[in-house]
Length: 514
Image (tube, rainbow, N blue to C red):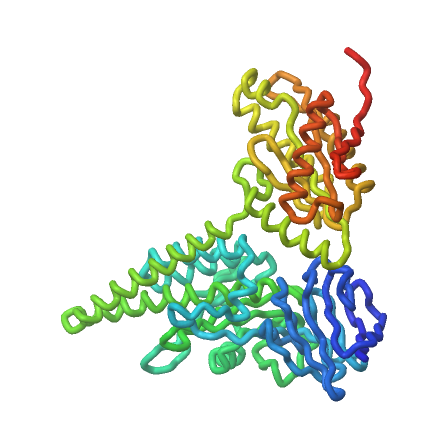
């Protein structure tokens, strides 16, 4: 049996006894321990108990699993002692016994590995956490700017500009470089949010040297709750409340460190900030490495002709790496550019996944296909810009009237789709009617012209006889949509099967004749 104690989160103060030696944690109700918290993935982690020893395995979750403030690698069973604090998203728990209050983590750390050789496709824990599309785009944009400069100070200032713009609670930041010949730590640039009145901001050199030596990124959320052994005299003198320090690693070794601190309030950072900065460390290290090589070639140009050629090759290779990263981002794009909804490809993939999950766990799955009534007339009468406006507005109405777990997509042209997870036919009909009414009641106005916009909705649900695969569900919803338009439009039709023959139930709002 597994005993779980919740120290922080929606179920704070509760304990759970799971009568099994293997239990899965996640947001989905299908898990042995369901945590209704947005930061927890649907399938987040797995707990195993063997011979009175607990193990935990992260299941490639979005926000990671942490033991005593240290991120663990996904896909590996990690032993954990009874009472050790385990962070799952924003939920903190312990196994076996309650976590003592003095063991609750205020410090988080991540071990950073140097960049792997080309062809090694394994992802580090940082690579997996940085796969959020927005973070990847930001890291790519910063990296592209860095690769355009070979001035070391300019590179560091660009990074500080980007980080200060993103993390609003930073009071001061620093970039350090480890001089390759002397091994001395040198400050390249520093920045104070309030300008510092002309004074150079202070920092903890002890923390920076420790991070560079261990190759581990460190985040202290609240220095007042830290073990005094982890703090330096300068931190107390400066009044540091929270800090992040990240080593800068490349193939050639440690290049330096990024250091940011908050002097006004504790908890100035989040775990996502730590992941973002560690994701930024590699491209910054590469850019700094290029700058140092270029500086060295300038000072001894007559002796370093061969080194100059190697530098040009390195720049081309790294530029190619950035191009490959850009192509990867484009491939990962799942959004329709006009409507802002998910695109057709993502809908198909999600539908296949949810169809299998619904079949496995006996859940209902509903699919709505809808057309904007007389959309071609709108385009012909008012132009395609008006049609684009109507399509984007309807998309926004749909997104704002469904759950966060549901999926709204552009199926093609003026046809939109809504996938309702764990929703039966009765509930799906209510949602479809709600969406139809929301569109009909919205005040559409193009230039000075008020527009009347309605939608026809075809609805199908699974499981159902005759619907054995995702394409069957799509075809059923499409046939129901055809019936809705045939019935006069501005209608909702539920597709059903009775004795092998198609049956359609029309549910529409009666309107008086004009």
